[in-house]
Structure formats: C-alpha cells, structure tokens
Length: 383
Image (cartoon, rainbow, N blue to C red):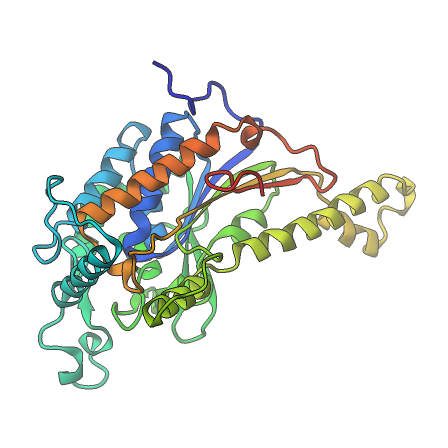
C-alpha cells in the first residue's frame, strides 16, 4: 500500500536542500527525517550541516541513494551501544517522567565516563595532567574512533564527485571566523567533517592545512543563511531541521531552567533568520521589477548594475522540522546516547516529516508577494 507521504515527480524547484543543525545525541532525529524524505522520493541537490548535522550530511552525501538510510542507521546503532546506561532491549521500558529523567541522567553520566563507541573515548591520562601545548591537553576526549567510523561508512570519493553538494560549517580557532567547507570548492576529507563536530573542551581542534577548527555551532548552529544566500540563486525547497526548539514552556525547576536556556542558546534563532530573509526577498523582487521599467541605455550606470546583481525573482519554500523535547529530558540530552532514546528521536523525526509531507502546499511553489513560504506543520499547523 502506498504511504500517505509518498509523492511522484520532482517538486517544481531548481534546488532541494536539507539543512541539519547541531545537537549531539539528538541527531538521530535527523536520520528519521531523511528516511521519510527518501521514502517520499525527495531527491536532494544540497545537504549542509553543522556539528552532528555535518556527520549526518556526510553519511547522506557519501553514499548512493539506496544505502543512505542503512548507513545512517548503522552509525546511530554503533554510537548508541555504550555498555553504561539503559539496556537496548525493547522489553525494558522506563515509565514515568521522574524515572525517565533519572535514567537519562545516568545514561549521560555513562557517556561522560566512557564515551560513545565509534565516536569518542575518554583520554587517559586526563588533559589536566599533560603539559601545556600538547595536543592531548586540549580536550577531554579522543575522537580517533570518529575518524575510523567516517572512513568506513562514508565514501569520500563519492562526496568529491559532487553528485550532491555538501557544505559543513566550522569555526576558525585563532581568527574566530565562521567558515564553510564545500565539496564544490575543495576536496572534502574526514577531517573536515570532524572539525565541524569538534565542540570544545570535549573534543580537540582539528588541523586542516595549517589552520585549526572547532565546531561551527560556536558561532552559528544552522546553515540556513549559507544555503539561502548561495550563488547562483535558485528556486529553493529547503528542509530546515532544528534539534533545539526556540519555543518552550516556562521552566518548573532548576533542571528545566538549565535545559531551557540551552535550547534558546543553540536554537540559532532560525525563525528570526527566516523572517529577515523574507524581508530581504521582498526588496530584491521589488528592485527587479523596477529595473524592468528603466530604459536600456541607462542599464550601464554603476548604481543600476549594483542593484541588478541583487535583484531576484526566485521563490523559496522553507520547511521547519523541529525536535520538541519531552519533559523527561534534561539539560544533558545531547549526550544521552542510549539505544531506546536514539530510537525515540529517530521515530520523532520520521513521524514529523511524514505529517509535514501530507500537506501538498509544502512542495508547491509559493504564490505570495515576497515569493517565500515558511511551514511548521508537524505539530502546530501552518506557521
């Protein structure tokens, strides 16, 4: 039987992009999102990510279409098999908000003490016992397992063949500048992906061609602006996947206070960015229409040439898919790599995307004056 979110034919956009935010263990939500998009025959032209979003992006761009979901699942099953924490058996269920919160904290503690298989492991001796300036003194964890996992699960030759554009955001440690590595302008290696996920002080800076880089989420936790401003501009359908919700309830205790401030800090204000883009697009479209009314002999004037470069009649659909945390989740939910929680996040991403794709307007060209439509349909109806 045909699933309700499956569509035939490509949506009428020149570019289809998947934008993946950082959020550690919450990243399995993005795996569920991609599974639903793949089932719906949504073929991506561009995937961009930061931190865990960069890892998921590499798993997508670095595998043929028929193996992407399989590889995403394999990665998330590897990193959620820590011997410390909740058992992975489906027959064992923790019920009740308080019990689930305690179980989650224990699992997070297990990751702190033991690391996550195939991802990172605790350094020994610890960094504070090592001499200043030593590479091992710059982080609590060793990310050699991540490099080995990426080399096994990701075909970097396929990434660099540019069948899908791949962008990952990083922060230059010394300049503080936000930088994107992109397979259309440089050869991508495991180090580029690791750099995007190198959140200090947990993970060390990654050296690339003499420069050192940390997690891109230090500066911005979403690649939304990078893709929307990408040149040349094209009619774009963008699926923006956020792992931290800017909206939330008033905290009830100190644990929820810490969680709420973390959500706000890492949500990257994607709604604010979207609103700003809509306003800019109104101006670009207005400029384009005005230029059409100016006689051709004046088109060589410098000021008009500058305006013409900014004019844009392209259209954009921005589809928000946002993970909404459960009350039982604490402030350490981004390092809670237990198998049951991973499965919950994956299902949430899949179900939110299925609900969204059931609305046909998501895949239709916008007809509004500004040429931009935004959607957050998985829970609340049209935004």
